[in-house]
Length: 503
Ligand code: FES
Ligand SMILES: [Fe+2]
Image 1 (cartoon, rainbow, N blue to C red):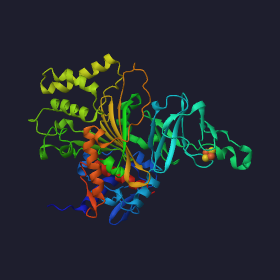
Image 2: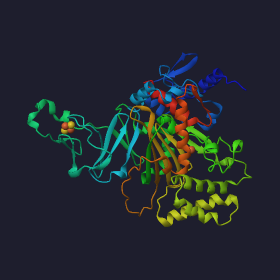
Image 3: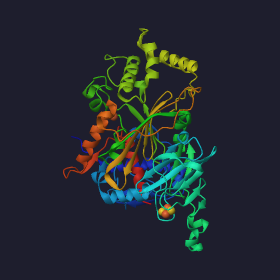
Image 4: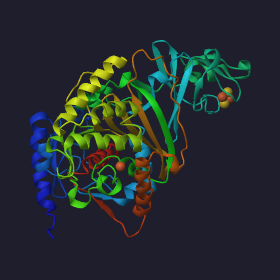
């Protein structure tokens, strides 16, 4: 068996990384550590503007450890382009470090704008030990507050709902606030020392937020880059999806017995399709199904866009079926197995094509024509076709999305409190509804769902997620071995996590 020459890999990778970086960022400093040249720079705005790494570059250059931050002090760090130490998935001190340095500093999405349509409507969002609530204060304003009473720490909001009379009222002793967070009543005020309850001490604390793509994103870090910088160049893949026009069709959640990264990673590669999802692989087994079906583009800040290599046709021998038939059949399985990326709407359109008995090469163009005709008739404001629009993307740190003409299935995974062995696992199906459709009721989470209540493709994934977590904790397992080509997204996520942990 061929032995991997890591030294050569590092040298080659470093050469590529520094050439790329030095042309753009001549102010970076380079030093040598453990024989690996490490480029150190703590300015977060740099990686926000890191040019997209193309698939072609990736194919000749294996993935590399974080190259603009010195991560050598991070425990269980990613130190080559191939392995992930198992402790990253269960070690309590590693989770504590993530909780403190990643979750308290990165941007994360807390709510959808349309889910708080009226003044006073709120949604609570929790992560690790923190809880915030997002509240609409008037038709044009949304605010986010720390969900804690300045008196004696009671959580003010739970789940979602509406603050009656536009007043936030603490359920314990009845202190009150206006929707803008200013105090409106301290019950028994004269019993307090006036200096201890000045308005700066008793107003609710605001949390930094920005609205984008119809989502309300929050960060606890006032020094974090702007959302523009954070998303950087992946915006060109995400913006064309018109996510702000989408509405949540369903939102399901559960608590899984797995580290948040194990759960998320199940959706961060297409390599598992042949074995885990035989229906999606059309029953083709072994090497007959091409595992290398995605081309990945890295955008800095941990974001990755994956593009299906459709120019190579089906992922298997074309004798099995042509690309047109594969397109229709895989979408049917996705409808039956997720009801997310593909919905009854898409299947209705597919049926118009399916029964026309067309030559294979005519199927996709006919589907596209039927789709746009249907959207026009039904008044669905589909965005104009855009070859850059994401079909499969990872938005760091915890959102994976799969898209299909006006639909999205996406995953959000968070730690469950401070337990490294469980996580809050959520799946959302979104779709652009007809413009004329009346406003739908705000989306609410359904769950915690029992295993058997998930659509079948998700059951196939969840089953592996839980088995994997158990395996990672085994003494017999030291580190995961990654394919730099097929498990790119996962590697990039870990690499970016280390950049946060090194700060
Ligand atoms: S804890 Fe909120 S009013 Fe006392
Ligand atoms: Fe899967």
